[in-house]
View 1 (spheres, rainbow, N blue to C red):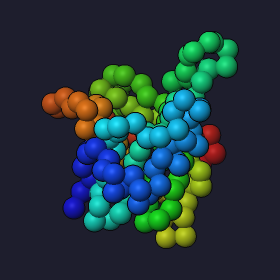
View 2 (spheres, rainbow, N blue to C red):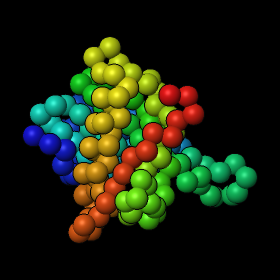
View 3 (cartoon, helix red, strand yellow):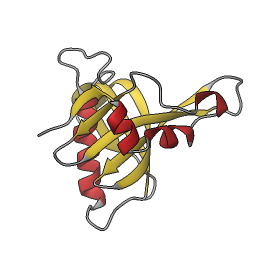
View 4 (cartoon, rainbow, N blue to C red):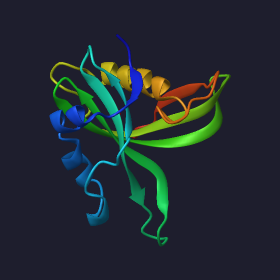
Length: 152
């Protein structure tokens, strides 16, 4: 099986304690995962990606940085990764509609998954996520992930 975009079921919400995860990234007004929240999941390999939050810009009222915090779940382990999105960008002579710049991974590896394998799975999942996951997709939409971490 491969990654697919879908809405999170109540069963999955409880199984993976997603309300608690969501609450850890959001203020008091948003303590539960939104209704009809989408994610990208590979059930067979027990892997999922969830866009869990935005980072407030402390210099501007009610504004956010272009970075986003996502959660990568791999067979019982949760990894936080921060990414920054760029629209229409050329990488190595290829034009992509979206380029995700990987800024950090925490932790950056697991006992049963190397950093390289993790980045390959993130790339695969984000390509499936595409334009806006389950909400909206666009034909021939090209997505790339670039490892932009300062310390590799």
